[in-house]
Image (cartoon, rainbow, N blue to C red; front, side, top):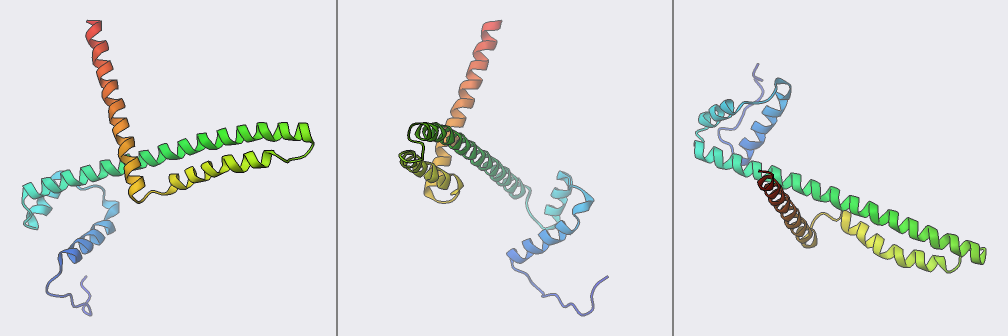
Length: 165
């Protein structure tokens, strides 16, 4: 039921249209997903050409894939930090125990604790810093490594299949 006190403007900017449609679609979230055919019909109603819609879909899929890869990269970095932290704790526990047994107090182990803690704290800072040039470069290096692993894995699988025949 339209609101009689609401007087919408006669024209909207493209950003306003996007925001309004986004809000309207999100309010209907409990109605399920929209099929590709419905998407094509909506695009047709908005006078959007099919080639433009397909290009937008391709961009959207690529964006989703990059987002997924970034999440995977962030998980990898956190796992790497966990391993470094465990290694740090094991090594420092060893030196702390030796220091306590030999001197009866904590003395020289503090210096090792602090010296080894600096690189760990820098790694932690780097792990949770997910913006900037350094992050982008690390992400690109990781992505290339992952692609190389996948390529070699696929090659090895093909070689094994070839040799089995």
